[in-house]
Length: 403
Image 1: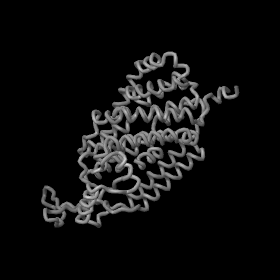
Image 2: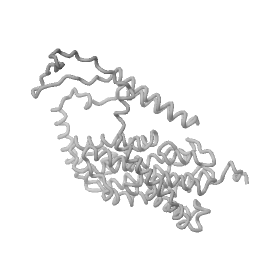
Image 3: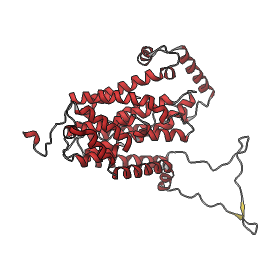
Image 4: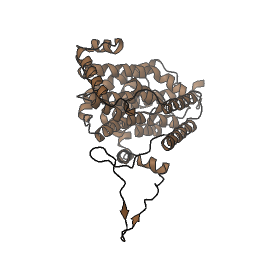
């Protein structure tokens, strides 16, 4: 949970779930976990929650910073979101323990014992039995297998250094676009260098049923003359990169954004927003209108997706204050946990898990946990943000703060 939350704040939630979805399913299979749903739910919901922390945590935050009339710095965004995100993370984690304590902590007697297990390191007899069985299987497996060996490689350390420098540049106030492009380019060059010079080359040797190497096959032309094998074709980095593109996932999002864009063009979301807000439309972030406002944003984010909702609000309220945008950012991001269709990260988790045969993460199973957890997290974070925030409730560029 902590890795997903922090990783999403650093490198965007969609990237984190894309990387970790297969890992979570693989670990569940290795440990013979009967129900992987709590772990997939934890990955998706903590990634969404953690992404609210920074302006680079998700697409809607990036869009908000670019569309806002007043400038919002990376540190200003972070300082506003610390308390709401911490509160939402605690509530989300507590709800996970409450709903799935029997799956997460086999043999535990209740919520308080689960908390004790997390912070004290205690184990129930059932958990110890599972750990012993896993270690027994690990001993019989190939101990020299690199994929099962722990530790950080030199490449992992270099990636951590680049990402850390990336975040320091953000905090120092350097241009977000330039910093992101430079960090991405460096990571891509590192990956290419590693693949071309250090990764083992795929073997072209074939083996029989007993594991013995087979001699290379000889080929002959029509006259019976042996054909000399051609030299190994050089595979370019572009070809390697293109083979790693997940075209199925790409088509999924292309279709989703076409559908959402078409729906947004009908004007239905804008009309719903104006009707729903009523007299609160001109004071949407003033208490008590604020709590109705975040509920409307949550509903719209799950109907029309959070990115189009942000675009709609930018067109409807072009001179919204930085504080207004902080409330929009938090509510639109946390709203992604309400239903499985509320966030792209949720769909990525479901899609990636289904690719490896795990279809437990569905809308019907997500909703019983997602709805109450999201509502509690949303209103707790909104209250804290309304009480403690560092962004002005006026427009500096318009001179409203001088009055």
